[in-house]
Image (cartoon, rainbow, N blue to C red; front, top):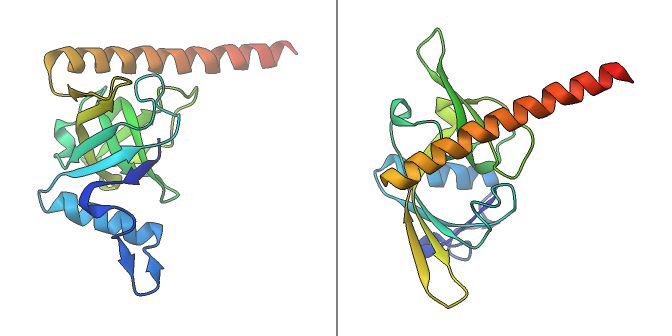
Length: 176
């Protein structure tokens, strides 16, 4: 899911002498904000996290130690191509060197993302502000017991859904 900068760090304010910051500069700026203990509020765009995130929600992201990240958490990271992404952790492991490696996936996608190493993780989503048709805003605390359990369940189902899809695709390819 792509994210649009919001709040006091909106795109009209994030400017340099030569116009808007490049993606790499924006990633550095977001990283510095989060590394300094501040939270970052951004507006969600895209469809990769549907149906959980529909687009238009505002998420609050904070930096946490990678050791504290759990399966099901929504993390904000820099992909190997340098794109800022918000996806769900579906698998976590510790490498031989002691660094964390995450397997992530958009809820609305069939495939896994490339492996994400801990130095690419910018932060974790703690709060979702979802605009409702009534004009009200619903706040979702991602650390509540209900949402921790729900997010874990979504991650496990998504992991097995993707594994099954790959297995069936390979089996069908062998038959033809």
